[in-house]
Image: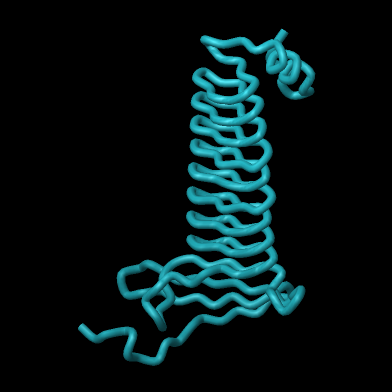
Amino acid sequence: MSNILLEEVEYKVQETSFGIWRRYVYINGTGYHEFKSHKTMFGIPLVHYTYGRNPETGRRTVAKGIIAVGRIACGFIAVGQLSLGLLAIGQLALGIVFGLGQLSSGIAALGQMAIAAYLGVGQFVTGYIGIGQFVLGKFVLAQIGIGEHVWSLTRADPEAILFFKTLPVVRLFIP
């Protein structure tokens, strides 16, 4: 069997009014797809989407755009298994402003493990305000919590109760 990395790659290229698709189908039926929009901001494509392994390198291509979608994505809005951006969504979501994922970070973070500067919500949480099962923060609403003002199964700090009862979202769930 020949080594595809040593051969010239012939993509199926399709140009639309919004951008350019590059596609390649391997012999075994798996594929590589990449889309880049024509529009750019700061020299970065508005939308960049990647799927599969690049036939030229044998590696995953990092999606880099204002909106980036791919296994590995980096952009203002990033969606991917590993995502990095202002708003990041993925298994490992490293967001500057907001992260949503199994392991997420940001000023606000939502996830199974949420590491937040201000508001964290999830199972294992850190943040100034933390809501979850196991939480470390200043204002804590948790099953098990550590912090200055904690409302948990074993502790009911009056300041924590007042703080959380005044939050509009929490008032929907707490009488």
